[in-house]
Image (cartoon, rainbow, N blue to C red; front, side):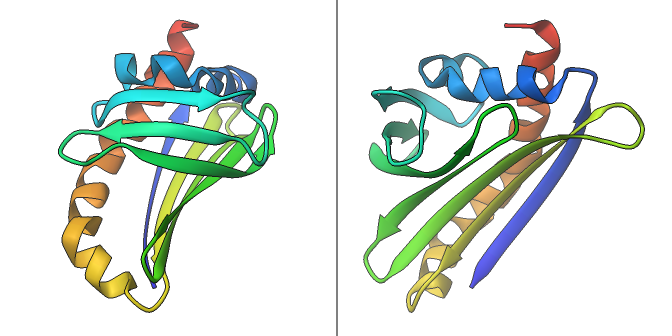
Length: 140
């Protein structure tokens, strides 16, 4: 299994961060990796998202957990592997919101996929978590 995690803090409330995540169609406006995004139906567990990132083909990703105002997890099935994306916004002890992004690849071919695009995912993660923090603070 391969995984990477990045954290940031924000003056925005956890609910404001979640609103940014829930507005999938606007992800390309603030996420430096996303070219196109959309959700089929509501942003709820079991729904599918369409996601096109720079340098990669468009994918259909399933929402496996949605906790309104706090968290969502999604997964992308690959041949003999699974990519999981976990996003969490929670009140921190400092009074600021802690935002955590975790990405992992598991399964028999996880090491192959990690070599193919794990490094790029890890390299872009700090900018992505900072971008959602800024966007939530702007109230967009």
